[in-house]
Image (cartoon, rainbow, N blue to C red; front, side, top):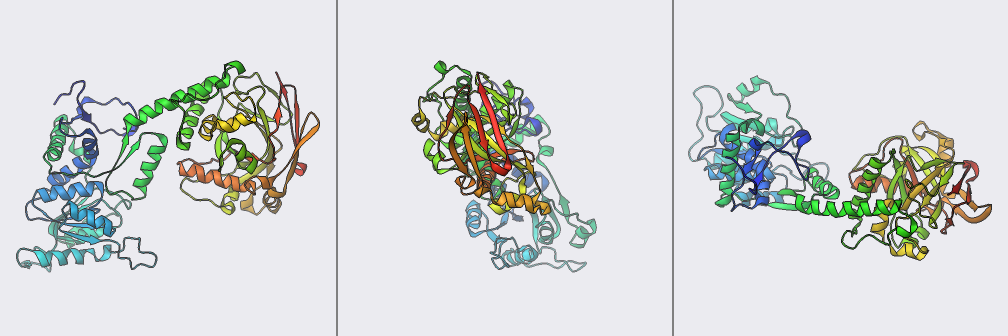
Length: 574
């Protein structure tokens, strides 16, 4: 029962010491030794659901040869294992599934009969499970037609002795619990072990009596692996079934253990898109994480360095190659900034929302970065180019007039917003100027285009600093028509950019994805796809609204006139 360095093991953790981590401290009593001839990925896939199925068919109810067993969600991860273990003990299995595709999987695993819980005859498109009220009739009909002998009447009462299943294993919960009880024969057992549709309803003990002195249990795995010997014996039994080919597992997807990989895998599980196991590859994820960590450190060091010591690009071995990788590096850069500087994240910046901006960095869609409190200023402030916490590159200070908004409520991940629905989350409008810069040496504007979108995103979307003007506060939820009028007409609102008193550019809100609210809508949806949200109080800058790149330098005075929204002014100093 002991383990040694180099042994392959799997383990179950919970709470703050969960298994979503590259490294964990695990009590040796929880370790399950994996035989050398069982693949570690397969053992990992079998751990939770294999142990669960094992105690269900041996302890919650000891399945015997000839038993009629009903298994809900028979094509799910635990369901497929339950079917195989019940069949291995000689049971006759009736599985339930929601679709024909899943029914095929359940039959392949050994189900003798499968009942579809979606009739396709509902008011909508037939995606709701609507067969539960009729399930007992269907189950008992199958048993009556296939029972070895006749259905026997009882000496007392109306219930037949062998009319129904011996046991139902129910992982669905709320929508299926009562139907599960009705499927049973007298003295049958209902094992409710999951809450896929919600927690089961409260069940009156008198109902169990009325339906034939039924037994009801609601077990959980931890009560069946309380001791070291139970852990080893139960896991060994599962691994031996794998070793001898008595148990077959379907590993549907393996995702890298990265932020985006975890989001993608979790979404599949939440969306009931799985008919097998989903694994996260910690080895690949850790290797990728280490590369991203090096890329973030490279950017951070270059931001602090003098011009002659800045990097031209991220090293070939560690450069992010996709947008997902780029945002992972950006997140690590954010974490490093929060650790090193007394600051906090106060919102998001959106980049490349105009045709000019997209052409300047060779992209065809926007991207986003983080706004920080330490690099956000008020109109009239002086900004020091030598302040290393800002990471400004002397000679590459892009002046970008933008419309900014402040959120009055949290958005929700998974909700798809439209311009009409997102604008109700806007609590104020502010004229602003973003100062874009770069960790990478920019000899000219053409060099900006050649860096590549993933590297620019990783470099916090080129954010250097933000200067905010006066805040126009309103509340669309209270029917604030004046505020609503200003917001609706932001696409027509103009501004004029002057440097040292000379007019260099004119801008208009229409340049920002045709309307600044469209940009806000884009970032809310883009964050939602990553499992992130905009929070109440967050500031969001919607993207540059002038049609040319304007560079400033130390000693320059900048003024942007937004008409009725006011002015934004600031000075650069050494």
